[in-house]
Length: 108
Image 1 (spheres, one colour):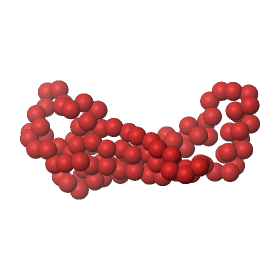
Image 2 (cartoon, one colour):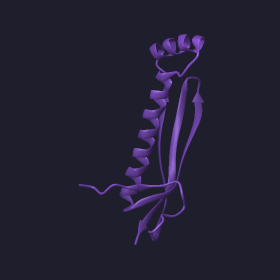
Image 3 (tube, one colour):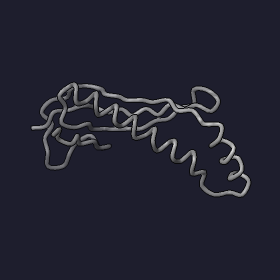
């Protein structure tokens, strides 16, 4: 079994010491809206409230981007990723990129 990767937004881990900084790791995915979800979301937009179709799409994209970042950190032999961040950008109408990035480290 593979040990769980520690991922934090802070630059350090309380109670742990960083032995080696391995470098930048990142993972990304690009997701596009589905025409069916778009229609339902447009109708929901008329009455207000959360657009669950888009929320689910973005939640899945965030998880995939994080998984890809963690996989890259594992290939470098990291125990943790510090300074983790998520960013999003629109790359085309109806399509967005989610980027997860941070610094891969080995712990003492």
